[in-house]
Length: 203
Image (cartoon, rainbow, N blue to C red; front, top):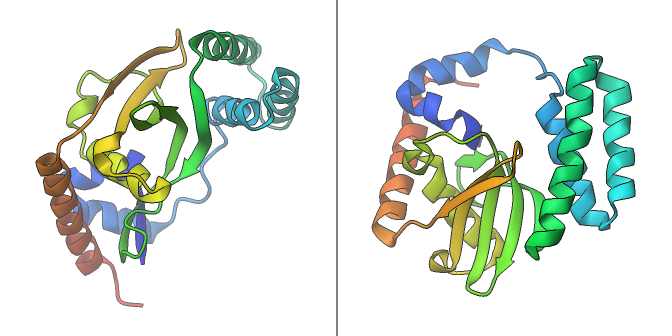
């Protein structure tokens, strides 16, 4: 089984063979980023419903990983801003930092993290914490994430939405994809997976 993070899918889409080659070279473990620390602290906020505990988790990450004072201060501000925004929004959060495994029994899977899954009156919404990209709705991963959330939470895809949230200001945008676009995205995803599998050395 081979898995690709949804964040890498667009680069793989452009050149599946090059992406497959990059997987054989090995690049070590990625550095723990400021964004990851903030996302994890936000997840702690949702899991514990305690800003105090979320702040404690963030301070743990800061002590072990970071030195840039300006960025550290901004991290603390962003967590406080997010907590205030979420409290005022009255959004019901079903889960956070959700790991994707889609399709569940596939040999070529979409992985990665969905930052937050919300419960709506009409179903669920998967949200990615990312800076806005004006072309985000055309990215191949988005209809796949909609299908993945539907599969993992046991809901029809028609009852799932996907969105992005920029943690600088907490601006949000969301959409949903119809059956034809979801099917086309999955077909392309499988096609990309076939190219990747063929390009990988036999083990």
